[in-house]
Image 1 (cartoon, rainbow, N blue to C red):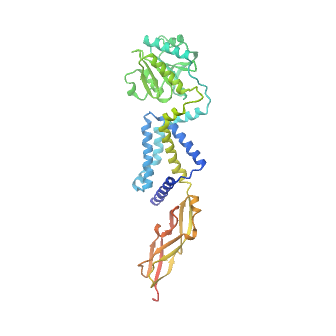
Image 2: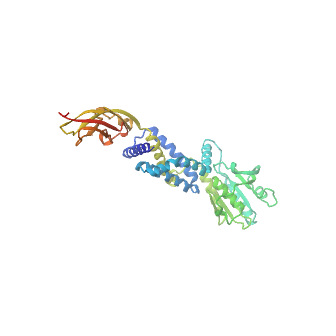
Length: 403
């Protein structure tokens, strides 16, 4: 096991040096890295600003420590991490269960042509008048505007409505005498889809400790999806919005209109020419991190695996033996040596120059067993020594003219 780790560390170290000196990218490698970078970017986008992000960073740092231990041949660290790798994969799946599920849902939605469009100005003004009316009368309300992610798996109960957004309909739903006034209304595509819907509760209790159940439900959905929720407090008449895992109490109705329009413009952009510079500016940090992680994965699992191994039968040469001595017997007569490197590196190898050289200076007559070391083998620096078989040689030295 130790020999395997030593060889692995040596190959990994030399692979890294070769990669730094000049990575040999093929077009398919660039595509490979790009696909992985996009997947990593999507994961980072989904878990940013959540409590899962510090854990994700911690796992990345642990992975970096393990790679460093291989490069620097830190035996104790390698031993500990070798036993933890399988457990870390299970822990990763458990800790990021919600994020992974959301990620696969997001990937699935990318392949669906879901017809979504923002509210028209008349519908927005209707929502504003309804929220203002409910706020003045201190009637609790919870209105949900779905984003691009699927929210329906998080919902419970509710009554199908499919009614056009209107002031009388909204006020009647949240009227205290209505049986569904305690639930949420789902507003999508100019329509009130369902009412009396129950939302999941927020996990961040600290953020809603001064609020009621409606606020906790709004934040709960905003923690799990990209939906936008408007909450009217029946105790204080205040208006709050929950979006992107945050709950915010607004100062006035004008601010609510701005927040709602901002949500629709960013979630469902209508322009055929989006602002690429703004997107790059907003996502530059995560894009760079995603590319670096993808390059690291490629170097560890692809670039390293592109290395091949070849075995050679290497002749033996003796030098610096005192003139009164001669080597009259040795075993074995040839050494099997295995090298690792890129296929292009082996094309430059001259087999005639491969040999094992023993310095016999100061060696007396008789039988000797000499260990074969890396320094005694003459081979190009572009390839790496992996294995020597056998690891020692037995020689017999006689004195010239002696008995």
